[in-house]
Length: 93
Image (cartoon, rainbow, N blue to C red; front, side, top):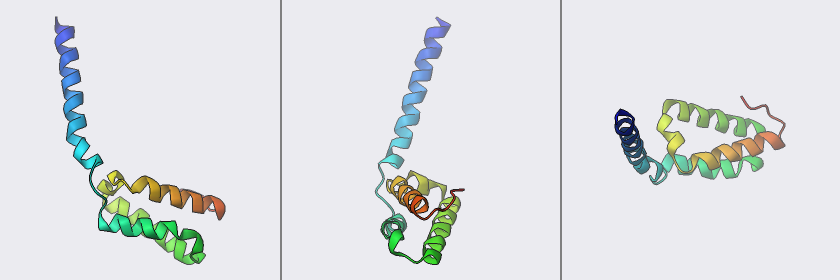
């Protein structure tokens, strides 16, 4: 009986946790992240020093604003930075 109650409680808590985070996962992108995304798309056309400044600025922004990592555009920006670093032989930290 205790195992059944614990199992049901665990399932309910998991569902509550998911639905609590769901609005964060479905949020529209912030204007700052939209700007970062637009800049990340053009990384290959930027001079190397400008691209480096952009990457440092973006990483600093996400460190100061951890919720930015939940933004729908974050994975795409991260992917653009990764692709840029691979084509320009940069080391990822």
